[in-house]
Image 1 (cartoon, rainbow, N blue to C red):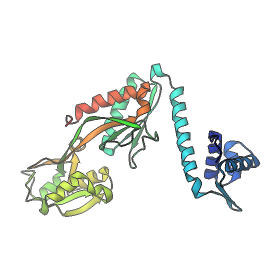
Image 2: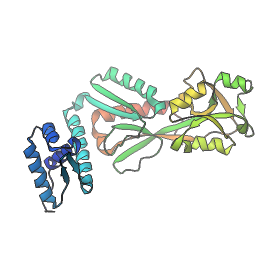
Image 3: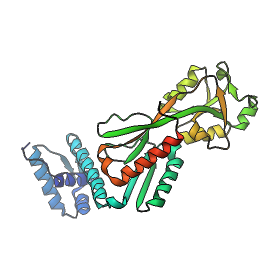
Length: 301
């Protein structure tokens, strides 16, 4: 490879070819002729001293060895989009979009905080994502995120807001059926006799599920892949569930079951990309979010 660096235009063309699967489609996306795209790819290959695009009668494919270049181009494209968004915003007025990624249990709470914030700052817009796949903060897939595990990337900073307190809950129907409605209490010897609603798959390794198993829980007739499913299964009388008190206490259909010892707690951290700390609208909402959540969470342990 020659010493001169790759340009963004080189990577932009490669990205278009990767996405379009042909020089023709790439040219249309970029507003270039097919011959220009082909020429630019040839120049890039000469620059690298290696083939990056496999040409066939059916179209084009990216060589496996060039996959890292495509990923680099996608990262740069995303960074440029975010930077352009931040530059276009009006810092003094907090104008622009704030993207927030949260777990299911925080959606209603964070939406309410955002709505209150917008009454004072209507120029701030929000995109709220309920995470199924955890947003990649280093890649700027979100501006702010609530986490229960400390981020490991050096590009991400976080602060602990407090802790989630877990407890056991069941529906009135389940309590009546199992004759524990009067006491609403489980001793260590009772767990093996009851049904529990738990996560399936990788989430089954959550600390609160291990806590149940450690006390003899072994009957899991209803499993779900997310918290909403756990809550609905519990409301439907399928068994007892270990839920964040912050979430379960908002339901009129669930009753708390007391235990001899406390369930595990989870830290709640507010995380963001290090570079976003100086963006006024993001910093302002992060401060408000931290203040409001700290009021409803258990104190930092």
